[in-house]
Length: 192
Image 1: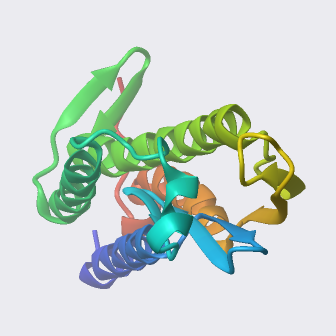
Image 2: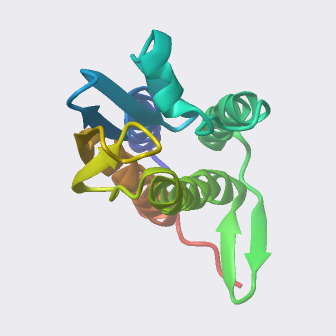
């Protein structure tokens, strides 16, 4: 097990952790509300918008529960700690059915798997909420009523952004690094 190969693996994990952080701080979805000159964005930890005064009433009922943002920030910290531990924790074989994985592989792969779940749940939840609240698509344009009568409305353009697509790649990258760890560091694969 060469030292340079171990550092190569650690560097790759640090790059993936950086991509995870980058995707975390970038908006994943945006809607532009033409008549209100408004911008609504979804981040992994919640929804933000630039609507003020009476225009902010347009967003009434879209708030996430109070526990959601702290929960998601805690999730981010746990993921980063798991990646860090995966770099330095001692080898220990764990059995997962017919597969034998090392503890670092389980930690790094677990982060990847959990991030895939977060990305999928986020897009499904956002699509359902958008349909229920405004009848708008997750991606595309729509006419949204600004008053209950439906006489006054505006066009809304919405799209998934680069931050979301980057997040879609981070989970599989973590899993790939976990599965290729032994090959990268030059260690024989654990056998059952």
